[in-house]
Amino acid sequence: MERLHIPFSRHTQTTRRQRWVVWVLGAILLICLFLLSRVGVVWFSRNTIFSLAPEETVLAVQVQLTKKTQPIWQEFLHSVPLISKRSLDIKDLIPFTHGELAVFITQQGDRAVAIRTTKNELPQTLLEKYHISVQEKGDFILLSEKLLPITGVLTSSRRSFFPLLQNLWLGKVMIPQEKQEGMIYYNASSTVIQFKTKKQISTEQKSVKNADLYLNQLFLNENDVSSVKSMHRLFTFFLKEGDETKPLLLNDQEISVLFRQTQTSTDTLLIFKNHSFTTQDVTRNLQIIGALAKPSFAKVPLPDGTSYDKIIVSPDLIPVEQISLNEENLYRVAGGTHEFILALFKNNELLLSNSQTFIEDYLAQSSDEKKNLCETHDYLNPEVLLSQIQLESFNSLVSVYEKIFSKFSLISFETKKYSMNIQLCSN
Image 1 (cartoon, one colour):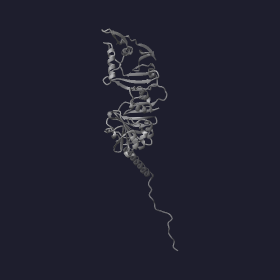
Image 2 (tube, one colour; image 1 turned 60 degrees about the vertical axis):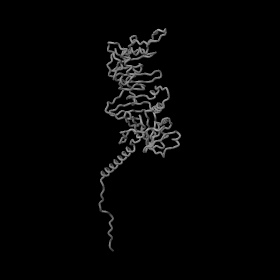
Image 3 (cartoon, helix red, strand yellow; image 1 turned 60 degrees about the horizontal axis):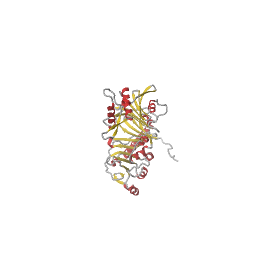
């Protein structure tokens, strides 16, 4: 019997790639997938929707709609009518919008909205019910109260190529007349609109208790602001001839403006920085302010036997008081019933206010409590400022702004090295 020679083991060697080669190939694959995904994101978020902007558009806002951003936009724009004289808001448009929409406001106050969709997907009954005009261009539809001439606006900025770790990209805002473009981001504490700028110096400021408006580095120029020009001339008229007394409102005078609304008063604080005012300048200006606040009247007879009241402003008759405040000299004059105008020199600054408490709060040292990040930069309280607007008739645009900004407690303006950030801080 002959034996069968059947091998029960293999002696041939197989090639096996080293572990580092596998890791390199995997990393290359992941990088390619990442780049492909980012290219896709940038491509599908390109700015062609702004091509539907109506003529004389002064503000355009691109709204990016994804699973993450849609709830945020629905909260921001809830009950905000996106089309002039129509009650449609974002929840009415989302069902037939694919990925993005844009809101346009024209110089005449008209509001229109562009959405990524087709005419076949639009609910005709809804459009007929609200009498909405429909204009189609490419992959987008413009909805408006009436037919508007479409000119489009050019934009250069696009969504960031690399993903944001702490912020969520919401869209973009454009101000065509000023040639300003800003990206809109969202994080846990606020919504940020970032405008790119040339190199500048970043600044911060001390917080002031309960201030509703705090703006730094303002410059009063009588050639640009007619009211400042008139006030400058008025003060100059009452300055004594022959002396070197200066009006407080000078050309290119750097100031900070603070404002707050209380239950009993409206307090204002002006801070003059890098000034060259003297005590004589301040006391004379206070006399003029006091005289203008409490003028006297004299009867002047006319040839026909009648008379008229002549307004007489006499700064020389107004006394300026000097009182102590934390080892500093505080100058004040009566500005009305139980009201005073006060001035104080402190740390190379001149403070001018109608509230001594406001001055004391500004001079107080910052507490060790956690600061509101919005209050470390220029900021304003939109609710208080909108309440100061007095209109003779209803203005729908102001009503829209009020609905939007009522959702934010503060709006701050942060100056960074290469950008200006508008931060919308929630309650």
